[in-house]
Amino acid sequence: MAYELENRLVIGVASSALFDLSESDAFFQEHGEDAYRIYQDEHIDIRLEPGVAFPFVRRLLALNDLRPGDPLVEVIILSKNDPNTGLRVMRSIAAHHLPMTRAAFTRGRSPHEYIPAFSMSLFLSASENDVRAAIDTGYPAGQVLPSAMNDDEDGGALRVAFDFDGVVGDDESEKVFQGTGGLAAFQNHEVMHRGEPVGPGPLKQLLVDLNMIQHLERERMKVDKSYQPRLQISLVTARNAPAHERAVFTLMSWGVGVDDAFFLGGVEKAKVLKVMKPHLFFDDQAGHLMSAAEYAASVHVPYGISNEAKIKVGVEDSVPRHEVSGPDLRTSPPDSERITNDNDR
Ligand SMILES: [Mg+2]
Image (cartoon, rainbow, N blue to C red; front, side, top):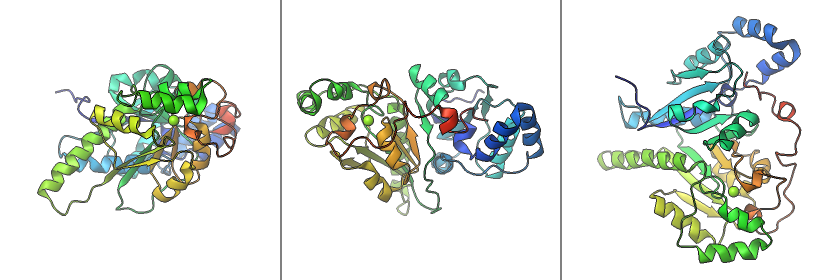
């Protein structure tokens, strides 16, 4: 019988997101493709070390014991490697004891076209180009950025943090903010529409699927009083009162929830993330990720108006704290310079 993917949370990861490929990539840059193949072949049994998304993937897969024999979570390698150089990746997965057996290698072509074939709710890659291609096609994806990894406490819960506008929700409100009316128009708009959910953003389905896992955790707690929840979902948004109401209403109307919510009104997100230490933090705005990356494994979702042009100060910066710090992702150097493993080798 076919292995169905529809009733699971399916995540696609490029090897560049799961593993630290900086050494491999440096070799590729210096010696070229042919030598690189030989290099990977010679190093096939030398385990690749964890990359930014590794702690998230490992903890997520551990939740499969909530539904024995019928995995809740499926993580599939979705890679631009060719199958030969992908061998080291698959052996590294086995060496880390990750229960992942499925993979797609597309040899240099962007693998994003296969996201719907596998019913994926998220594709993670370090390649800016591949992630943009996915988002531009309407698929759920995020670019892992060089950032802090929090993988020290083995028994801790998986912590996932989401921005709201442009991530779980669409960019309708952000467009109002970035229009001529600015913050006042945005607050007015949100109050007027407080009883209408915003449209779905690229990661709505991921949030729905994570809620499915939490539902099973609550079922487990009913029969096992000692069970401690192992998945914590947080909302970290610069919306504050009164605009926070619409975000809350939207989640309620979708039948999903979060464990905690931070309505920051311009207080820097990094301050919260430093304490929370999420295993992944998703945001559509580069300015937030620049400061967050020091404390949290950070993922850029290049969706919506904030990513269409040079970033103005957005909803997410609705109380003027200072100019968005650092270069934004659109105007920083080509990704081959900025993120060395763009080719997902
Ligand atoms: Mg946002």
